[in-house]
Image (cartoon, rainbow over all chains, first blue to last red; front, side):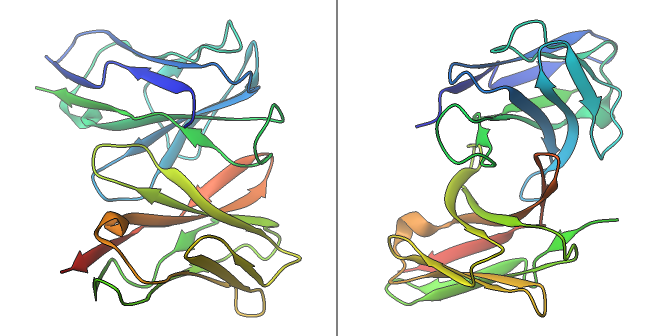
Length: 115
Length: 111
């Protein structure tokens, strides 16, 4: 069982609100990722980090931002939520600290609904 | 751009039968491939992986086949069980520790 956690699991929020999705891992992994996924569809990489103070935008453009101040923590923030942000957000991590080097371990996801 | 795609969006099999899920990838430089299983309401879970210097790898009830000539990957699940019902994704490592995911195949096991 992967030790990667996401909170909240479900969030319903009104348009214009600022939200932060939390992601933490206890595996000491240096790399962390955020994906956006519509139900049953493919995962789209929106942000990734190779270590503390390192963040990069992914392949899918997103209005969200991320920070990596601590190795274990990779929060994602939406300054002003819109209905188009409604989706599932998955956090993942990978690293040399145990496991297969390129395998990404996923959290349970946050299902976000913006009304 | 790079993409990994699956041939079928859905697959239904009888319990106890074998199932085969296919995946086509486009980047011939990809050196590592993973199959993930995603159950409803959960994040993807690792099933099996294979490196590009191999053409077959077996796990418990699962086998992954890699055909680099035609850039094709498949996942075989033997003696399917109700718990195998999920969406299955293939993913390729295109470099820089990033994975590109395919569209997913929903596998349904009929009793």
